[in-house]
Image (tube, rainbow, N blue to C red):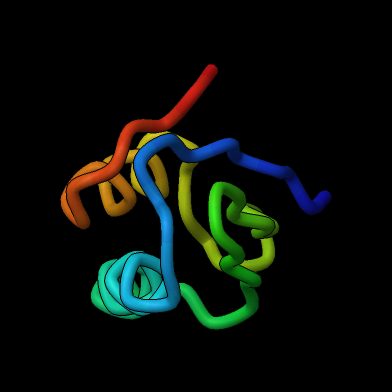
Length: 65
């Protein structure tokens, strides 16, 4: 099931690319990143929500819960 994760601090295309880069590092393959939002299916990517959250935070942004 695809989930939407709200992200604070993203303001431009470079922010989107930074999050995409971190998600690629954890081998996420099927996801969509927009300014302020990540859409991803954790099960389809064999990832936990915590792994995804950590990747977003590694890019320098805040996950809004």
